[in-house]
Length: 498
Image 1 (cartoon, rainbow, N blue to C red):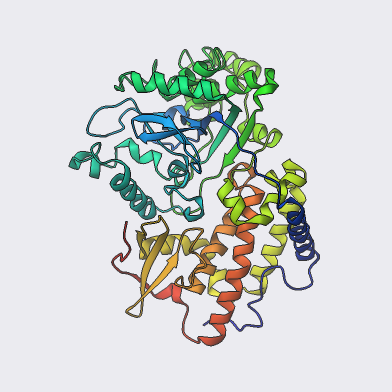
Image 2 (image 1 turned 135 degrees about the vertical axis):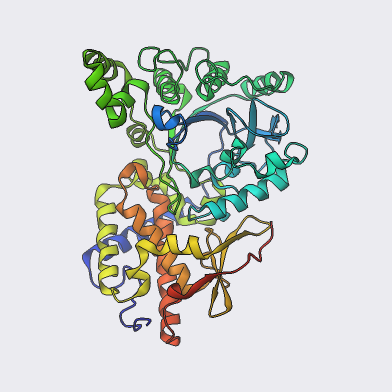
């Protein structure tokens, strides 16, 4: 049964000091916005390497190297296999190579819009807020229909789950990533466009000598000769994504005019397996039990050499680099739609983006208080299972603008919940399901270690949405004496369109 309204209170309301601290922080940010409203958002041209966490699949289950892609802010796709300069309002792109992109012609690389790569949609305001393969598959199909005409028309490309063009759609649903960015000039961007548009795009992928990290290293060194390199000692002669990120970072540190910044995109909470930290070769030997134990037994004499090599030359922590030079992951479009977030320019950058430990602690305490006070609520009680239940019972659909929905049936009647940032609180989204979804999402991030959680700017947005959802769910509880929706959900066919 729904809990009484008196117990279903809005988050951070009440008399706790933790809630008061959070309200005061949010108020300060809001007031600072007034003075920042006329300040323009900096526009720059950049190139960067994207260090993607390991999916723990195939050979990556052994090597733990993850994946690497390249980001451009001023280069955009004319097609997935042709480059051009970006036009006004475009957010840049991501280019990458794979063993098998899986399109009808065997190509070396594809390039996709940045927001497609991150979220599967053009407008980041429509980004999915839960990680479900049902949602990802719907976003992939939308991308295929809108972007891959003439490149992916055969059944093998359209239906195969092994086609790796799929990894370039809504990548944050399957893995976390770090983006290391420096400034470029338009001349450098034009030179790269000419080079790639005039060269044959043919697949010559080789895991040992021409892998994704080699591809990224080649592009970075086109901009800045000798900026990125391999780590022959720690990666046993191969090029790894972590080595490219480390050498590129060290090069940028020696050239402060490049204005190195680091962004962190956390994996979206949901039912998809969590990605793993990226590792160098010697690091994997030392940290992976399935490799370390056999090595200890059969090659123990090499263990000190491996440990020394990693300790002296191979150590690199992407999270610490992010904390040293944090940049917001929110696009100008997000900042424009959420003016209070622009206050980052007026306050300490690290605490506003990464978040101070005390602020995260205050949010955790406020959340625990809310859960305790509403412990009889099905939304609070079942939050750890809600995302799994929603994924099992729901059917995903994506509107033409990219907003994702999950459709279910309650007592034979259709019910929908928005699972994108833009529609989770929409009028058409069931209030109690929206609240349960945001409660589960918030719980995941508050329990996660710092290298697994979203930025503080993003979390503040989530927290504000959770407050609004709490109010909406309380209003429904006051009117509705029926049993909890969550226990009666059954699948229905998707009604949305791509």
